[in-house]
Image 1: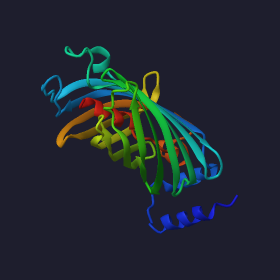
Image 2: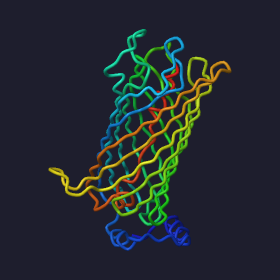
Image 3: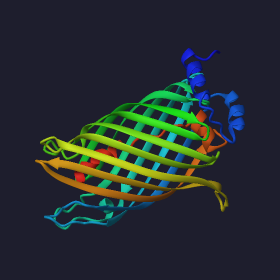
Image 4: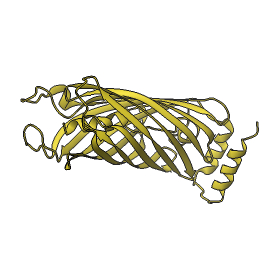
Length: 312
């Protein structure tokens, strides 16, 4: 079956850039197989340091350390020569919420838990050049003694430059809380996210990312904005007992949230350090997954929405 005209034009454009991977020949051979059914699961644990805000009548818990853990499962199916669908499901837990309570309120003001489901529909997908697509999903969580929910939609692309994968996402999200009088979550927000992955080998990579969201929070719909940035390193550790060869990773995630209430700016920062393990099926390497199978990830929309709770 012939490629679409748009796919041919995109391939010609990327070819003019002259980027060539050290292992491009292997990927080109695999390309004859077309898009693949593939899946992955990863889990992580770490610590967060939160500071820069007032709570409990003026106390400032700068450099307050708490523990967290999480996981994410992804599954990708080809729908045709240039079409695919991917489903993501992820969660994150905060040990402060689970095991500690605030002496004044009986609860803790930090993140409790979040879960999020995302569906990606990719079209004009070519493993040698990139993809275009749309995504959407929903999620919920618990924080500051309130249940909350959120939904989101957006568009995304990937762009392949030899050993580099560049990804961009932009969209809109809305959140709500179960209590009618509560409106601390960030909502009515637009967002953008950029990701760059550099494959040192087919199974070893470094990832960089940056995100921005702008919306409102509180009953008065005060301006709220969020900046997030991060880095991650994945590599295969061979010959581990019982499990054998395993992909391990280390990750850093930084976050800054600001809420302008009546002209007064409130803000906090969050620095999280994680280590984890990754398992996958359906492909021979991480880079093959990236180009032929489970290629995409998603913004942490629910966690972003919950950021407004911290300044409540």
